Length: 360
Image (tube, rainbow, N blue to C red):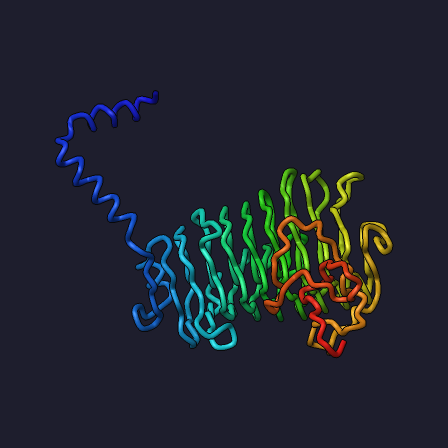
């Protein structure tokens, strides 16, 4: 038995039974206190003040408006979400640093949902910065954030972090050309889940993974269109598992860029659609025809509507071998659906699952 435990037991024996009962009842009452809901600006004028006033498990609901803030969760397991969605609820960082910071051990119960995150400016994580934190970031729009010279993460930058990044849109974020840079970029001990997102028109790498041995990033069912590079992987050291599956990578400068490749360290690259990039594959052999990877027109509904036409070759062309495949797609529709009507349901490639209608 440790000395501290023995010390605690010794003193507990000296407590009067009535005092001990009062303490026990107080603890039970404290545990029974329900989570609070804090409204911004009705209860607190700013998002940061709401976070500062919150306790673990509280929900912060933010009304429509533009909030010019740079917020820090300070390690709190609180849910911050908009009431009317990202189009009407904006957090503007005023180019004064990262818009949102997670740097105090935040976990998956620290959530950010339903905002436009804009005008962040920082060398590391201009929109959202994560340092040894694993928050949940979902249903946001990241636009016009700028990564400074020599850093990484124009929209989201993570160091030693394993967040859930799901159902977000990334547009018009900028970064430099250094090898760590990217719209979403992770380094060191990081195993992010990046799934069901849209990356469009970012003049830099969309996703950049620079990870040492033992990390397990999972990048699946994203639609990555018209960026300078779709996905960049640093493969100089062995990794436990880098999984890239069910992604559409279309019309970028480079589709998949692999640097410092050591034989045997190739990322797991399966059931991706890589098409019409200036260079589909760089630093690695063409993966078309291997492990379910294809290079065909995905047949989007329209230029800026990345849902699939009924004749799309991406329908039911994905793999179920994605450990964290979510039950819904980017739009909230069910995944997986038998989209081609052959009696076997497989996920579609890309952020959207095709939902057949009676007319199809």
